[in-house]
Image 1 (tube, rainbow, N blue to C red):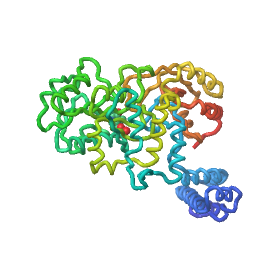
Image 2 (image 1 turned 45 degrees about the horizontal axis):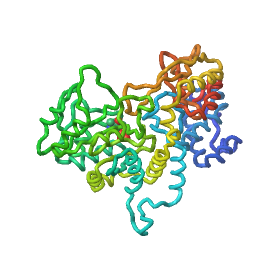
Image 3 (image 1 turned 30 degrees about the vertical axis):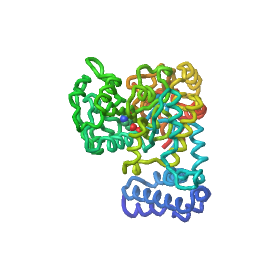
Image 4 (image 1 turned 90 degrees about the vertical axis):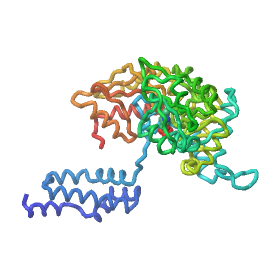
Length: 472
Ligand SMILES: *Cc1c(COP(=O)(O)O)cnc(C)c1O
């Protein structure tokens, strides 16, 4: 293309002022503000100019681009002035999906946040004395009441930013400068760079590995105990199982060994359930109560895994030890904010009222597969132009709880002639409320166990329109 020709094309481009005067431009200004819209127009025109310079846009292609300019502008301004963190629909069937924000909060928790933080609160204020109070007193008595009901008395709980922080703080406060004995079979990495040896190094405690990957005996721990030993650590194998020729002392044996030597036992439980998982069809998984009942000095767990609350790290156990955690300088750096306390307290109150069904995580765990199947069947009718079948599948608990354990479930299995499953999945992700699905053997699976039934109508509309336009 000659330069003369190109300059003719350039002249067809509207100016920002002209665009602002169009009906669409004016409407965008009302919704997003003049500065945002002007900026988007400038960038959009720059992009068109660059494409003309490259010879990628001839006069016909430019006319096409100008015809869809209003939509392109709206998309750009929305993206720029819009939220990065958005609600999505989790149709993966992974209940505690770390990439999708782990546990959804209960209505009560969300309302409690709104109620508590839109004004001032007594976050660090003692209402009786009218003076400065302690932030770390919140949630305390709710935890104690829950534990007392299970016959566990004399515990304290401290709340920090996440479970990684709880482990770091506990190791630093209880074992900094000393040694911690861990089985080689438990030197785990948990998604997103939580590695026990690295956390240990950061805490200033020295890792004393015992046993082998598959077998560690109580005698291995006993032989490693010296005057430098500060803790025996048990780490829950959250995201893998060792099967076959394996051996691991029972937690009770570790506790007994610790008692004989006057050394505390800490268990990093990861997903801290506050219900007996057996009653949810998950066998052989410890919960926070069973850990404390066995007599560990300290158990650490996440707030946003099976507990079903906000992101938080909890350390519960011996009050004297918890006090050392509170007194450590790291505690200040790892503390949580008022929103976390508000949501955590609401979640714990739900447990105290035994209204477990109100916690989305527990509700999803308990959802009968037939209910999921029925919803899949009724949704199958709205998938126009797609091949839609109801398929048996398995939901995954996820989030480092019950590795290898799944729940029977059903999924809507979608395919489309002339379109790959990856492309279908992409279109689902680009809906107004993104829908995240699983792709298996060139079909898209929507496991409705992890979809709130209130979203079925939205899902049905999205499926009906999925092939009509190409969302970007
Ligand atoms: C998930 C998990 C962690 C990390 O917890 P975060 O709350 O993500 O920091 C640590 N240990 C175990 C055993 C876990 O399962």
